[in-house]
Image (cartoon, rainbow, N blue to C red; front, side):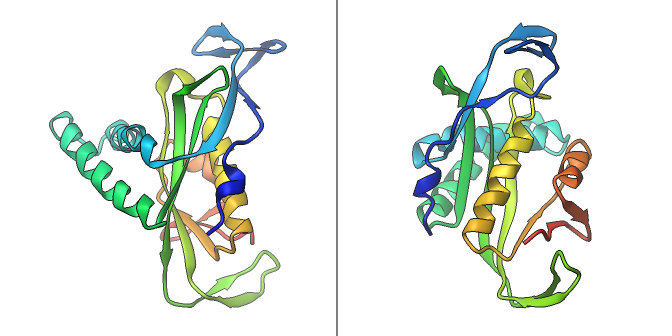
Length: 196
C-alpha cells in the first residue's frame, strides 16, 4: 500500500464564516488559521486514541468512568492495526504549530467477500471486497464548524479512489449525517460511498 505520497498536503484554510480576508471566526473569535493535513504515524496514537474516546463520549455512548480504559484499549488495538497496515489515519494541525492536532479521521482497511455494488452509472458490478470503514472522525471543540471534518473525509475519499478500494462505509452520528450525505454517502443499513 503506497501512502507515502500523502505525507504532507498543501495548507488548508478554515471554512468558517468569513469576516475579513484571510481572517475567520471560530466560536465567535476572529482568527487567521491555516491547517495542514498529514498521515498519522505510531507517534500519533495517543492523539488518535484520545479522539476516538472523545468521539464516543460526545455521542453519549461512553460514560466518563470508562473513558480512560476505553482510550487505553483503543491505543493498544490501533497500535497493532497501524503496524499491520490495517489502519490509515490523517491528522489536521495548525500550519504554524504542527504539534497542535485539532482534528483527525482514519480508515480501517478490511477484506469482505465479493459482493454486488451499483456504480455511479447505475450498473451493477461485482467488486472484490476491498473495503475501508471510516472511523475516529473528531474535531476539537474550538475548531468545529471550520470544515475540517469535510476536508478529512474528502482526503480519505480521494485516497481510497487512488488505492483501489471498492467501497467506503461509515457509521454516522446524528450530528455528522448531513455532512456525509453532502459528500455523497447514501443511507443503507450503513452509510456507503458509491462514487467510484
